[in-house]
Image 1 (tube, rainbow, N blue to C red):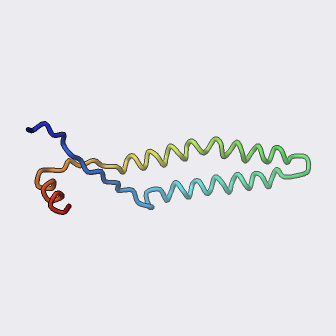
Image 2: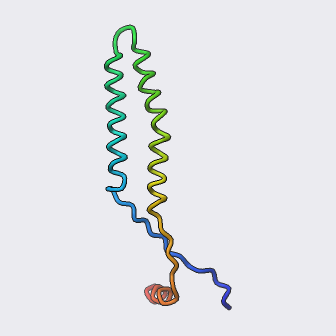
Image 3: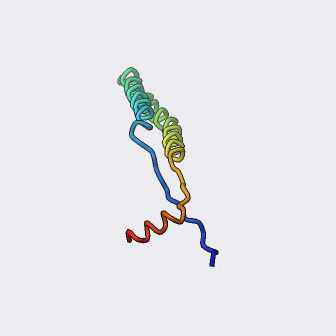
Length: 93
């Protein structure tokens, strides 16, 4: 019976170098928000300093998550396994 579904192999080609630039940008955002906090820090503006850090982090997290997820999805490949490879895999098991 030839009703078998085709088999696929999942390959992830993501390396650290693919997300290295995103991590650097994220670190720059963190340090800039901390610098802003220190610039606003005084006895009368402590609330503004904390709100600034919170707003920067809350607004930048979705962009960071989106860039990581799209980078990961762009490096996932599905390859069809041909008959010879199926036989080879079955013989290894």
